[in-house]
Image (tube, rainbow, N blue to C red):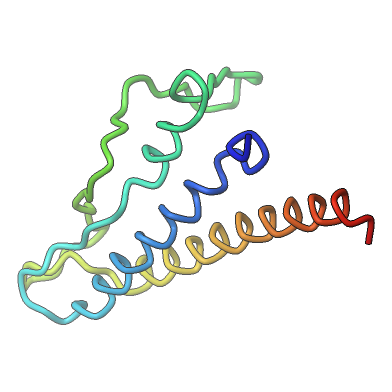
Amino acid sequence: MFASIFGIHERALIAAADRVGVLATNIANADTPNYKARDYDFAGTLAEVSPGGALPMIRTHVGHLPVATGGTTEDELKYRIPFQPSLDGNTVESPVEQAKFAENSVRYQTSLDFINRQVAALQLAITGQ
């Protein structure tokens, strides 16, 4: 019953909470030689809980990029490919990590807000207040 009320937002909260630790570790190791930046496969995790796997995508305009096929839904950390690798072998790029951290925070807050609104609606339906 509650799975249909909260949708994928419950799993999104768990994935975002896991990802924040990984991103924080990357940021903390920005100056560690040979440290390889990793990231949580957020899209893959959410694809696991959506009906029928990945959501269907279609090109609705000739200017849209082609739809990618395949992909993985493994719930594991992946190594991030840097835009500009450093000479010491470290692949952490602080601006990228900070942007991913901010994006993750927005996703977490959005899912949390949705769940809070659903709970408030349930409370209103039960108590009438």
